[in-house]
Length: 502
Image (cartoon, rainbow, N blue to C red):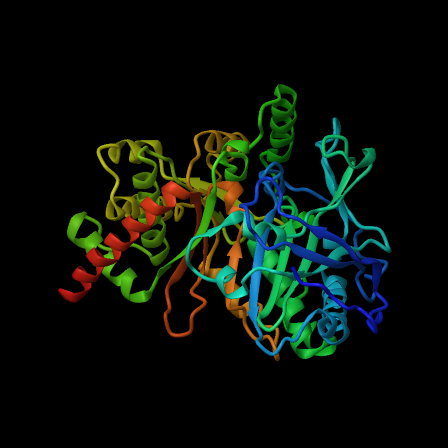
């Protein structure tokens, strides 16, 4: 465990309010593997938008039906690992780098101020939840120093998820004495900076999924990174400002009221919400690993599809997801449904502007009839074709909304069945979006750690220069991870043989 001398550290950012320094040491919990290095919390800051948003900006954002789909889904938690062997230690970081991060975060929040707001903890008996921002609201920024091996944490190999959890901030809750079931409101966004002396920095974020989807989140992160890299004068203009106008989301079919009724009925019936997906609640260790689908591997998988099925092509997305879906089924020894999301901004009528901030995703699935055809044995090729056919079906006007009334209950159904789903997308180009400039550059590794709780595959563009392709993060119980890794190695060998034969 690192000890820290904080003498001489001063407050530089007027938008940040200190909540104490070196106030707590996070010891390994019962859920953590024995022998893990603890993490020392140096301080908590409250970072407010700076300058405050103009008076004419809306202070409340009602949740739309798109947002309500993700009301019960666990928060989305990402880690960004930045190499920097010249980083000396916590005191130097606090003096030299922390004020810059505080200032750039405050400037980014000026544009994305709802992220500093709060949201009710439960669906109200009347009306819909809304994100509420009041002047003076802030985002909690936790600063810590890590005692674990930075290079190992940022690798592709299987890592115990208990080692990654301390790098993630929690969403503060308010009211009711702090009890989770009694809270009245909660923050919707939090940030943690964990310093690894002589190694690098990890930025952890936690986002309430009912507030924003991946596209809106990356819009914020791109703005923050640009401001940090270029300064508030240039960085704030680097991306289009977010649009908060809820009137651009048409709800002619009354889906918001349908979803509110469903949530109230499900809450009244009790149950475990979405806990069936949550590996952290199950006995035994869970591992997170990254599997890379390079351009060469994807070409080999495409030729395997052409050889083994009647399909003439599949998208890289379908090829990577299909291979992983087949591998999970193999590792579990039992079947699993497959679901994914699609962006609805261009599919809505009228289209939703690209810079709209919030959720705008539709739930999609491989149809039950298609799944029945695969019951005889799921392979990477047949799984990829099934996903590709589901994607092709979305080309029909309005198809994505055909079963929309059942979306809230579909999430529960998929959780109880431990269905395989997807988080993130290569199209978000998250590595390029989060280039902080010198001395950090692009992240070495990005992880969506919350897939441990949602049964999802974490997709991103490959973060390695020159490799191309897609990287897939996956959390599985340790025994299933070992079986999946063996499946992946066989997959690479088979695909390579198809590529070599051409």
